[in-house]
Amino acid sequence: MKSTKTMKSQANSVSKQVDLAIVGGGLAGCAMAWQATLRGLQVAMIDRCAQETSSRVAAGLVTPITGSRLALSWRYIEFFTQADAFYNAAQRSLDESFWTVAPALRLFSSKDERDLFEARWCVDDPMATGPSIRVDRLTSQDLSGFEAPLGGFLMSPAGRLNTGRYLQATHSMLETKGLFFNHGLDLDQDLKWTEDRYDFPSLHLRARSVCLAQGIEARANRWFGSLPLHPARGDILRVLSHGPKIDHVVHHGGWIVPLGADEFLLGATYSRQGQDCQIAGPIGDAAQDELIRRWKAFFAQPVPALRVITHRAAVRPASYDRHPLVGVHREFPRLMCLNGLGSKGSLMAPGLAALLLDCIEHDRPIEKALRYDRKEL
Image 1 (cartoon, rainbow, N blue to C red):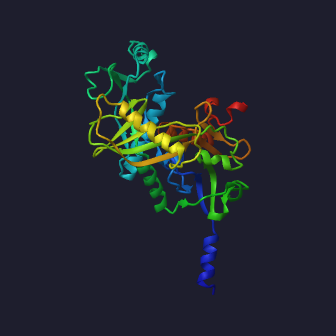
Image 2: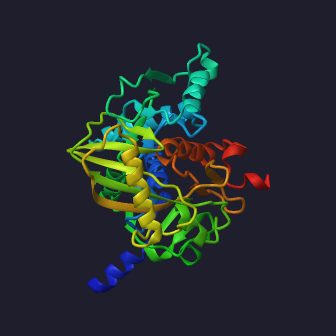
């Protein structure tokens, strides 16, 4: 008769079989997990659960009109429609609340910006303004309390994902099934291609397909280590102030997100200098000073002093051309990459995850503008 110890050892050595293993538990990885689960696939996720990652620090803003050119975010309606349906489905499945759709407010910074807005968005041609995008012009009187002598506008559809709550709920869902692994992998050693499967020997896990959704950590493995990532650090403050009453996410150089109970998120910086998440030091000090200066610039009158509750920073996995880096490995079948989402992870991840699954399940090609190897094509 075999001993209990021997039986346990043999049980532990048997690999768990899944359809898809996802390395990385951020916005990209969680989108892959949900899209695969909704298709009836069994999914495992491996994540080292670091707290200061771009997905966990992100404010989760989904905004249609961005930048100094007041341009419509690339393929916005397509991605927003997919994201809205996706997050609502995930909320219903989990009986959670982490996705909010509401107009966002932008204050004009200059006469040139206001004139550009009127030329681009205050026209009758829907092809010029973008179908399904709504803008509501606001005067300085409408924006009493803000430093907005030239007015501003509300834009919709817009939304916000509570990224921390969404990620935790997704991880917990997988954990209850025994399919979430809090583990730091060395993919050069811990991922093996064997016959028609991928093995993670250290986890006793075997998968038919693998998606690497690692953000900037992708640079440290041989599978997709040459991704053209152009990372940028972003700092965000959570602050307390008893003065202003703010009903919308407000954009004006930076942005303010009202959280209730006189608390706000204030962000975000964009720096190529810092490639770590350290708060103490010159980069963190400069970022905090900049964000507090931006806060003051939002308001017409001095507001009560704010208190910084938390200061967080993370490095965004941006690409050089600011388009995602998506695709299937040229040599290894069903080994996927979902990366390079930059500051658009909340918006784009659901649609891109579906696109990747369509590629490996139905052999649908991925367009060049999205492919991780587009410069080599």
